[in-house]
Image 1 (cartoon, rainbow, N blue to C red):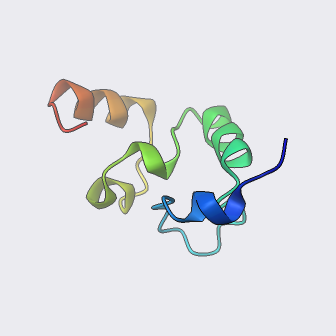
Image 2: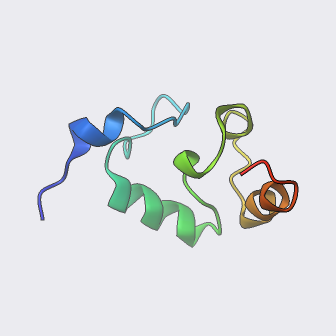
Length: 67
């Protein structure tokens, strides 16, 4: 499968600038799942910038209807 990195970068809202996985969704997802997190694209920009990408934070936002 060919990586669509350039296309993926158009919708990547990751604010962590030295991230080597930007636009490489399969690597990003694998990295975050190991840490019990979701990638930046699962969160609104204002929450993503806090770097709290935990499952718990995601569930909280879903409960509050923010996602």
